[in-house]
Image (tube, rainbow, N blue to C red):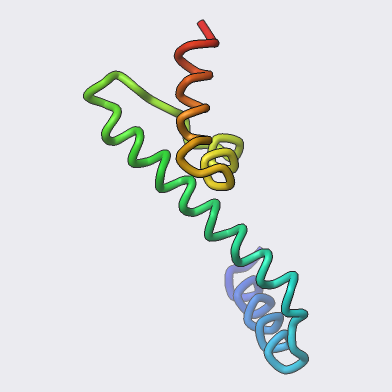
Length: 88
């Protein structure tokens, strides 16, 4: 698909949402979820950056990002424990 058409569709949808108004609760829920996923990916990135000196590496994928984003630091610790203590 042509990038101009894709950008036009996205801009059109944004304009329609601005004119009609979006339902507030679902948009707030989606926004909070997106922020939590970004924070989870950032925590995994920091773990991988700092953990290189301790030989700790956790892959950054959708499942690990969801666990670390929605559960926070305890979820990140659980991922590390599961990877290094339970799995061979």
